Image 1 (spheres, rainbow, N blue to C red):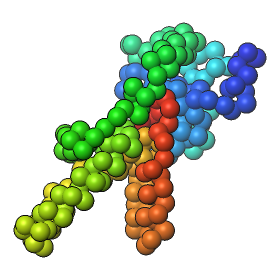
Image 2 (tube, rainbow, N blue to C red):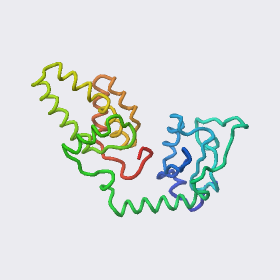
Image 3 (tube, rainbow, N blue to C red):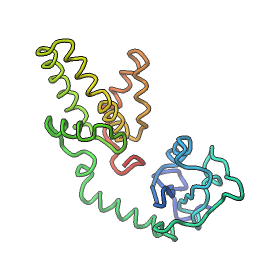
Image 4 (cartoon, rainbow, N blue to C red):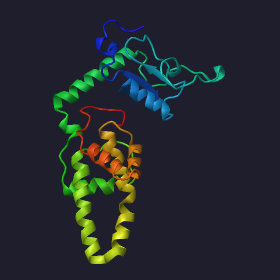
Length: 220
């Protein structure tokens, strides 16, 4: 069933799966990412998927581990309006877009420079935004911002002020952590490692310091 010319895909290299979500094409993603999407309930048995080597969009239950086919009466393999009927054309246009991004340089999108003020604006501007990505500069400049503000608040207002500041920044801190993990291709739920004394914190610090994935991933 594999395309004889898709040598990278046959070797399992690259992001080569596409899927349909909310009436729109998503991807490319790796097979491992597709299986994780299935575990998260985003890709279901009747979700349409495609990769090079397949002649047309097909239901996920034929290709993705961990999904079960829906009842016969609920199966619908019709393409939503706006999803390319010829997935090969979609694959080609996606590749062209990736090349265009590469021509502009990945730094423009995924490693944009940040600073103290910019990091603070993005932190509060995305107060409860757990989707999308945040790069290392945005994350670590906010860590420094937060440290300086925490010390100032503690000095001026004492323990009560420190407690209030911690409460105010609790949700956006988890949101920023989730976006930083998304930037390296990991789920924001990995922040629960903080519940593991010492080891969990060290693992998260290591991940938060990693370079971003150089191109689009399933988080943005």
